[in-house]
Length: 209
Image (cartoon, rainbow, N blue to C red; front, side):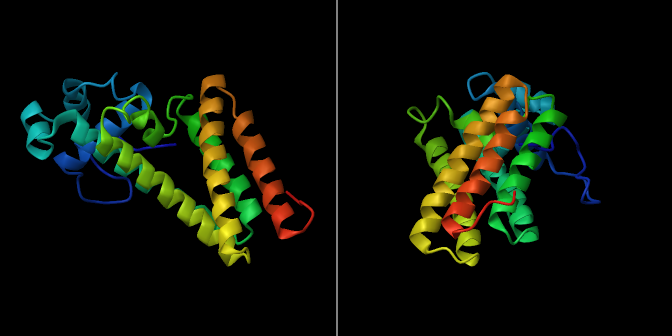
């Protein structure tokens, strides 16, 4: 999953990005690539071009508070991607193929470094830091909700759409990790196609994807 970091200006905005936002972006990017335990406050401050004092000013809770903010940012980014793709494609089966392709493209462009920042940050921390665990759980719930709503809009019953949405998000997350480890987009592309076939089965039609 792609994130924009290290840039002091947002390509979609004319105004410079403030210090707090730079710090969050830097934390998200570093934890996405190195995990929570592999990332230090000093490294975050250097990446964000901010002083340590600024980091602790905005995040007095230190790295743990920053990790929660990084998870929230990753949550928002993937939610935005889902809304964009689902909004552009009324057929949920094709939308999932498009989503898998987009994730694969992001991994390729990052040289297989930028997986899911929510998973990367939360792994290994859930049993130690409940705040991070809750933020990650909320992210997955939001993503499932977006998929569920799209499936319901396509005519599926709420309970079926809810079960399928859980399968979709779990499958995409696992496939993204598998693609990153293998440095190969195939796991994601296969996941997209098979999810599309699953959706078509529940719609009672033959797959055209």
